Image (cartoon, rainbow, N blue to C red; front, side, top):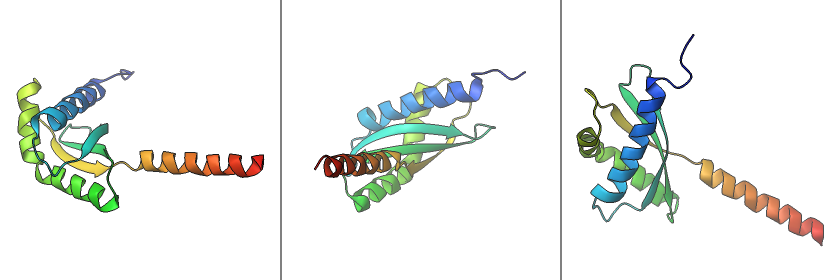
Length: 120
């Protein structure tokens, strides 16, 4: 019977916290916007981490540029995370944009438009 909250989930959770800290506090790159780390998905062997981020207050081009820059800075970010985590091996970091926030805002906007038009 597998554990409900196994090693992969624990490492993923800790990696998410450390990534958020490093991105917000350690990276001093003015090209980066306000970035939040939404989720970290690890492969079973913990070799690769898919990091889903959201960039606030940026247009579509700015969001993609921030994700591209994070992927370019991933070796540096990985080194900083390695200093903070007590693991023998730190996963390869691959950043992806998480559009769930944008979709949620769009749905909320559509719902408010529907509610305001039905009230008329």
